[in-house]
Length: 401
Ligand code: PMT
Image 1 (cartoon, protein in one colour):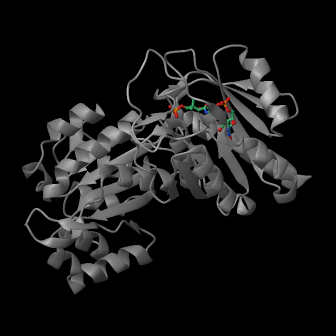
Image 2 (cartoon, protein in one colour):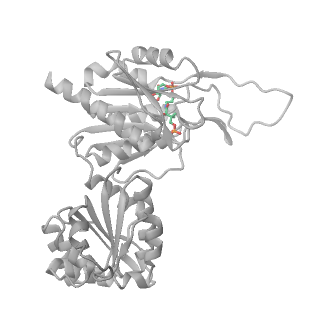
Image 3 (cartoon, rainbow, N blue to C red):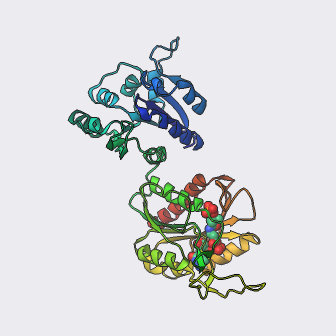
């Protein structure tokens, strides 16, 4: 999102308050946001909220600023994307029939960027044939219309008409302005920890939050890939548009992965898989007795090594991760060779600011041909795109040669 200029247009519906969270998500991702509000929108939320969030002036009146600037033109033509959220029946009708009677509707005439319209209104209004016809007109003109979700609406009725969650709008918007260089590719990503039960109430696990793997799944989806995400238990919500498989143990993860691996072009194993599991899982809760308790652990299957062994047959690009607290380079190089990988992404998990359960990461990529590349400490979404760039490079090279 860095250097992307996005206009958020807000029209006058009760869901206007959700636009504040949407703007916050874009700002967090590094976008430059300008907000245009209709007069009615300012009855639901104030321009001050959006000026504080975006750091830019908000325009709600065509003539509010004196001077020669034709802001409806400069804004419209200098942006990468225009999102109308929420879009009322009124603004939808204005866009469909070419009515420009305020700043927001007028700037849309001059737009050269992609437009995303997110309708939100009472279900009856939404299903009204006039609104539906207008939405069809927008789609026919290449405007992206995001369907509203179902649920209890502000008017206490239930049905379609809710503004989708800001996270979902953000993800669709991100995909609209992302390069689609992974379109047509099948990508599988594993994420999060595994848990290995000891008894009905206890288990062994690790500190993986899933953030790195989910960032990879989100980025691959936004770049057009068909994504399968195999995830151990996390608190994260799966990215929109990915096929999601939830697993607990290493064995469950292995089985899920082996269901799909033959059809994949790219497999990335960001999950932190338990190397060992408890030999005999107690059927009942283990009672406290004596001063010590011995658990016998036995080896789990090495999923990545199995994928490496079958790589020649299925021809996927295989990327592993290595979480290390010492000898980062040497240990990662050994895993690259032992597991027959194309790239290994090494994480120094002794750092507090990278690796497990952080929003940022700093990685060292080691390639099969011996090349190495270090990233700076950057958000995991950016790390994900960097890894995907390098994988795409390998695929392009393979296809060219
Ligand atoms: O989830 P986050 O909080 O965002 O943190 C991200 C991360 C630090 C967990 C992640 O980036 C990472 O480093 N994941 C790999 C952690 C790990 O298990 O490393 P490892 O060195 O033990 O395993 C090496 C590779 O073999 C990994 O790709 C792992 O998925 C795979 N493996 C390991 C054991 C096993 N039985 N089967 C496997 O497939």
